Length: 415
Image (cartoon, rainbow, N blue to C red; front, side):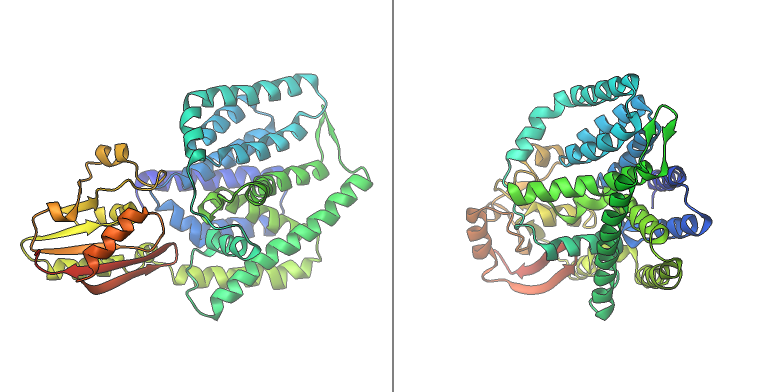
């Protein structure tokens, strides 16, 4: 883990501590929360990832704290950065401002500041709007959303596949989904009680515990709810990475709900112990190499069998990018076809210095062809790939839970 990622991780934990202070957690709740967040396998994963999701998660936590405290300038800045960070940003902004509206209460001054904050965040985003619209116009190859898919997504943003393919995995999925489902049922009952007994108060003097719990629920659930509705009503774009910023808020919300509004023994002797056992098992099975499946083994195999005149040839950018981190100065090419619009566009290929070519235009003695059935390549690219590998030998298959199998073929001397 690089120093920058270590700083980001420490900052995230500091934000968790700050936000948890807004909900008056007791010592057991605070201890359990910090332990859960520190050793949650996917939190370790994202801390070592080069993508935007770890930063997006920290931005969401920071914006949530500003929303809870009524710090409108900080909320505006974080919201603007969230919008720039990812196309799912607007869904997170909706949750933040829904929670912030409760902080504003009936104070005209706060309501005015809240409206100005939201407008300012949108105005900051205008220069990036054309790119955002173009991204939305792309055809996402994501299957229609189902309850099963959503369950697996929740498992992935917690345990990241570290429980393997054993019965422990099934138990982990049921634990994650069961905890969230029970929390949702308890939340509905609790919010009904808060509203029925009018134990919901927002005034110039502050916001009470009932309203604070509703804010926590909005921060943890509102972006998820809006994304699910969007995916069902229009078209699905949700996959597990988009839910990463919700992993910590969901953990805080579920922990607070199950330890505050259910009998104490259920938390002490069922909920917390089960989660701790699974988390310890997940961390025990964690290794940096598990992020790429057996990719390191495949690279070592190619290095051992490498001969003068060999080249590496990729059919899709989904294999080119991870391989580029490990092959050193070996000659490597990408098929001269348009990649999926949100995967690796031609301008990005040029920016990264990626060599594009038809295989028949390259001089080589042997070629290592890397292919994957991820469905992101065009029909013409798929037909060409099938021709390239028809005389090849399948050498290895790189397996990992977060991507389609990468198939490595070795094709002999160029005819």
